[in-house]
Length: 88
Figure 1 (spheres, rainbow, N blue to C red):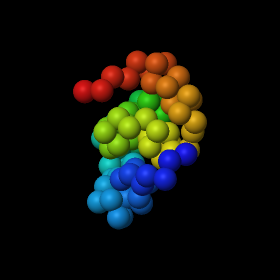
Figure 2 (cartoon, rainbow, N blue to C red):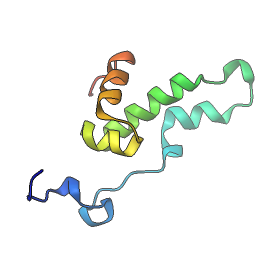
Figure 3 (cartoon, rainbow, N blue to C red):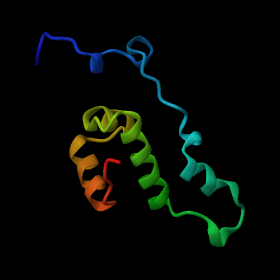
């Protein structure tokens, strides 16, 4: 561990970074609008959209994204590979 404090160590309120509520993620928002079961998204497609959104919100800081998602960084890396997510 390091004695050096970086912006990533600070709460979002203090660092000035904020995350929009996940319901604002267009893919998720669109997927829950319809009541048509045949058009309902899969849990996998919602997870993929949410992970991609969190990565974009964190500037693709995978350590921070994993912390927000509540998963280990290694799990996040596997999901990035599995869903073939790319930084845009």
